[in-house]
Length: 491
Ligand code: C2E
Ligand code: SIN
Ligand code: SIN
Ligand code: FE
Ligand code: FE
Image (cartoon, rainbow, N blue to C red; front, side):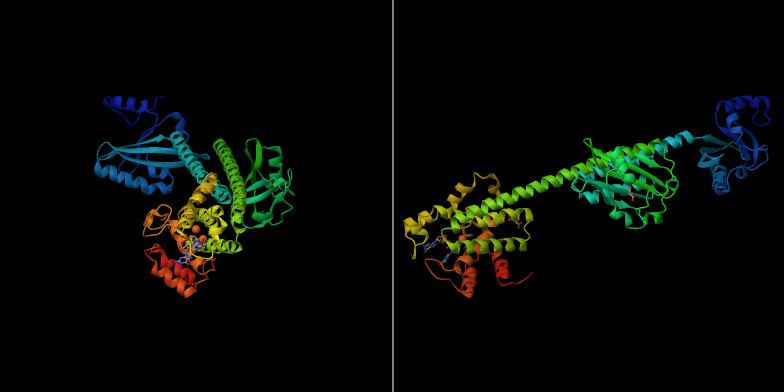
């Protein structure tokens, strides 16, 4: 039997047909929500009670919607416009979403039409979830690109993982090739610190099995697996029910295991498992990158040790001629590094400053003994030779590429602020900053030391001299900083 909407007059038959054409659940209501008549698709009929007419629409829906519906009724009534509301219902254990419209048709009647938008809503939620997952992956990507410390990076990843996968706890165990053990590296959500000491052999424990078989392991209900975690008694107190272990693999090698723990049963869907897979892939890349980075850093460090050994060897060539030079070199290098640090020079730059200071007078290897060790003042032609020592240093050192950034000091330590120095008569800030700093340190140390041509000056005389040369020989802004350092004053 065809169900008609309302007790229709002949002239309203078109309206009835129109309603039948829609797939929605349709009610005709009076202004306070009482149902006058309704029409619905057969598949929705089962959610309606036997007797619908004369009931209030508010009473057919859960109480928490009553106020929402009353407001919509009132608003539709007052404005004469369509009002919409969205709500969800649990029908025989399943979640449905409805999009409802209230359309006033007269002073006393309105249409309430409810559309099942569960499918749309599911798609929407799924899209939202995927967006969140994508942005999580993106933030992990960014963290990888920023060369973040591995432990920090893994903690960040575990934050994202436990949030998005809605799990209570997670950890990462990394394979240590030196010990042949899986070692606990990062965690989130554990009540006790007990698992931080977890070290597993390949094949041992859940994580060990995951690493050995290179396959995800899931234990839906740990309560059925007695004895597995017996080695860590505190694990018991965590109250975990569900376990997932995923191998972290890059370039065909197992780098570690990502473990997820939940304190109740989990019902993961395909999306959840997909995302877990993506996260594990991403984490493996991150770990692989971080390890490579560490490796490069380590070999750079070793290389740098080799460089410094070479530099010290070079500098010793000079020391061999003059024991005094060795001590001078040590002192000026030490003081220059201190001054640079005090002035806020970056550590990466100080490496070169230090090397430059050690090598500052290396050019003197080419100066004949009769000039270098002359017990009195130099003659003009001797000065000409002596003044070549900075250029000789550049000739000696510039073929060594890693020393190029260290050349400022050997090249320009005899330039003067007022432009009367050598070899290039640079003035003011034309003189590289390291060389300006170094000039102060070098002259101070030279004057306070015995030389073949004179004996050492007192500290007071030397300080007095340095001050008198401020703005002449020395950068006037650096003089007070240097004197503070010499006098042991702190900022
Ligand atoms: P150095 O002995 O290491 O001195 C470095 C710089 O300290 C000198 O650069 C100069 O600016 C300052 N200095 C050192 N001693 C004195 C001094 O007695 N009086 C003053 N006012 N400043 C001093 P400079 O002058 O370009 O000399 C470069 C290098 O030439 C010196 O290195 C030293 O090896 C040599 N030299 C300089 N003067 C003489 C000298 O009279 N006799 C000899 N044999 N060598 C000299
Ligand atoms: C694991 O996290 O898989 C190790 C726990 C254990 O077996 O003790
Ligand atoms: C610095 O203060 O770090 C160096 C600046 C400069 O080269 O002048
Ligand atoms: Fe010099
Ligand atoms: Fe010197």
